[in-house]
Length: 65
Image (tube, rainbow, N blue to C red; front, side, top):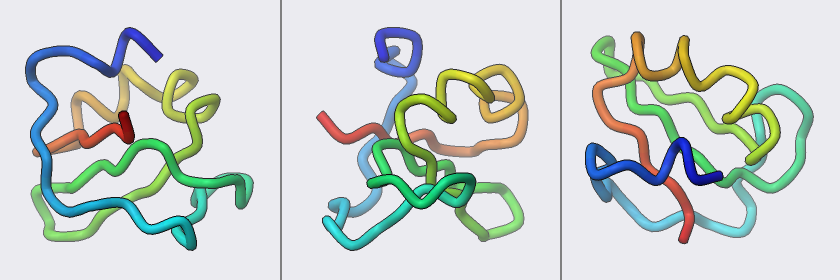
Protein backbone atom coordinates (compact mmCIF):
# COMPACT_ATOMS: atom_id res chain seq x y z
CA UNK A 1 0.00 0.00 0.00
CA UNK A 2 2.90 2.32 -0.67
CA UNK A 3 0.80 4.74 -2.73
CA UNK A 4 -1.31 5.66 0.29
CA UNK A 5 1.59 5.93 2.69
CA UNK A 6 2.56 9.39 1.48
CA UNK A 7 3.56 12.29 3.78
CA UNK A 8 0.07 13.77 3.37
CA UNK A 9 -1.42 11.07 5.59
CA UNK A 10 -2.59 12.40 8.92
CA UNK A 11 -3.72 10.44 11.97
CA UNK A 12 -7.30 11.10 13.01
CA UNK A 13 -8.30 8.36 15.45
CA UNK A 14 -7.14 4.79 15.99
CA UNK A 15 -8.66 2.03 13.88
CA UNK A 16 -10.84 -0.54 15.60
CA UNK A 17 -10.61 -4.20 14.61
CA UNK A 18 -14.38 -4.10 14.13
CA UNK A 19 -14.24 -1.46 11.36
CA UNK A 20 -14.95 -2.96 7.94
CA UNK A 21 -14.47 -1.94 4.31
CA UNK A 22 -17.52 -0.18 2.91
CA UNK A 23 -17.09 -2.08 -0.38
CA UNK A 24 -16.52 -5.70 0.65
CA UNK A 25 -16.65 -6.08 4.43
CA UNK A 26 -12.96 -6.97 4.90
CA UNK A 27 -11.05 -5.36 7.75
CA UNK A 28 -10.62 -1.62 7.11
CA UNK A 29 -7.06 -0.45 6.45
CA UNK A 30 -7.73 3.09 5.16
CA UNK A 31 -10.11 5.79 6.41
CA UNK A 32 -11.04 8.69 4.14
CA UNK A 33 -12.44 11.65 6.08
CA UNK A 34 -14.45 13.78 3.66
CA UNK A 35 -14.95 17.54 3.62
CA UNK A 36 -18.68 16.92 4.19
CA UNK A 37 -17.83 15.41 7.57
CA UNK A 38 -18.48 11.81 6.58
CA UNK A 39 -15.96 9.05 6.31
CA UNK A 40 -15.38 6.03 4.13
CA UNK A 41 -13.54 2.87 5.16
CA UNK A 42 -11.65 0.64 2.75
CA UNK A 43 -9.57 -2.52 2.83
CA UNK A 44 -6.13 -2.23 1.26
CA UNK A 45 -7.32 -3.67 -2.07
CA UNK A 46 -10.20 -1.23 -2.50
CA UNK A 47 -8.17 1.72 -1.19
CA UNK A 48 -5.58 1.08 -3.93
CA UNK A 49 -8.29 0.58 -6.55
CA UNK A 50 -9.96 3.91 -5.67
CA UNK A 51 -6.88 5.87 -4.59
CA UNK A 52 -7.19 8.57 -7.25
CA UNK A 53 -10.81 9.33 -6.41
CA UNK A 54 -10.12 9.17 -2.67
CA UNK A 55 -7.32 11.72 -2.97
CA UNK A 56 -9.68 14.08 -4.84
CA UNK A 57 -12.53 13.74 -2.31
CA UNK A 58 -10.79 13.21 1.01
CA UNK A 59 -9.63 15.87 3.41
CA UNK A 60 -7.62 13.30 5.37
CA UNK A 61 -6.49 9.79 4.43
CA UNK A 62 -5.50 7.64 7.37
CA UNK A 63 -3.80 4.30 6.89
CA UNK A 64 -3.34 1.51 9.41
CA UNK A 65 0.41 0.99 9.84
